[in-house]
Image 1 (cartoon, rainbow, N blue to C red):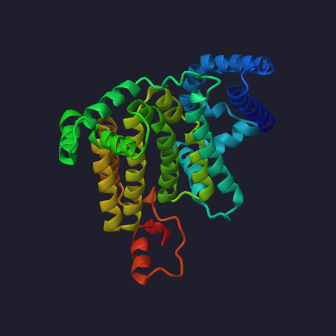
Image 2 (cartoon, rainbow, N blue to C red):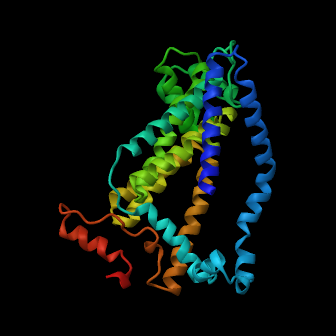
Image 3 (cartoon, rainbow, N blue to C red):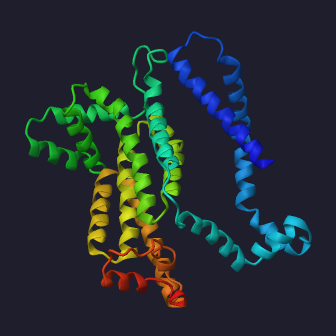
Length: 350
């Protein structure tokens, strides 16, 4: 029953999404109005109920664990046996997490999901500039004038050293982002404001692909990584970033996902090359968007603090169990590599 309801909602949202795209191409037709009005009502209802639903979901485990003795029959008894105890509850969550790393056969559906994700991002970033919706071509994005001003300031400088020094001195919190946008602009025939307002088209595609790379470097299967890519194409990083004009945020997020992907790969494989690659992306992140870099440093500090505590309290349950090698050893790997990966596994699994 729940699957049918979900299928109806997905089909309804996909139909309204298609109508929105058609509306941008054929705006004079009145055929879209009833469906789009119905979709707006559904959106308004769920947007009002979302805070309450999220609150109940986040704290639902408290009454479930508190009143576990009242669960006697049916699915309640089944939940009691699996998740009433905090230890079993964590195992239940971990089993769901492990499914993302299970071996699978590579199929075409994974590539279809990836292509659909890229098409979705392209439509989200191009849709506001369709002539039927925006005949004057006015920019979409709050921060677009800010980047236009910075590009014109750099353009007034003629030599390369002056441009780089100006970016690092005057825009200390995002010099790499400004420089990448500037040099990308100089490769085109666009004006400064056009380069700023159309840059999300390229950055959105790269950002979505960076999340796919992050999932694959973490060890996710191709299907799970393509689903991460799909959800990112609908996420607030794309929609809010588009209408906010957060160009530096997008560039920072690209380096952020690549940094964490190679860091987890380095911790899993013990390779210094992967470690140095992750540090390089961390440096680019620091000079692309300082706020995102600060957030990543907080997460990194928490990660290694937990690693230290786990190593002191329970040495055989460190973070290597969270990012342990999940990809089966292949025939072509060397004996030294096999021994290194085997040492990272849980001692109880050997």
